[in-house]
Length: 147
Image (cartoon, rainbow, N blue to C red):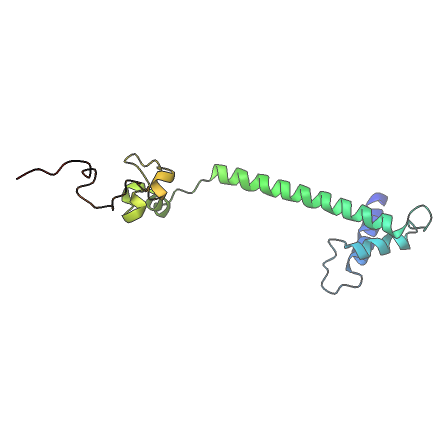
């Protein structure tokens, strides 16, 4: 029972430091300024062995550690949810069905739906010296027929 009372007192003291000087604070987390005040009031900072700079460094390292852990767990949870719940809706199927593509987009895929790569995206230029729709291409060297 005594441990519960001590824990309640400790939690109460933490909340007082967490909201000190910040009207919007909830009391659930401590900022760097209030952490330094807590350390100073508890006589952790003695300006010889432990300075305010040391306290700031500890706060920053612990904060970064918790942020890194939070990001890691959040990313892992999102990844697991994404793997378990792949969205297959009519709109996604319709938009990714290459057989329904028209115009220049249709030229980017072969009959099986596989992309053609660069050949499907870029217009390949033939360096023959003739314009694209010239019907007698390749006949320059031939001798004209005598009538």
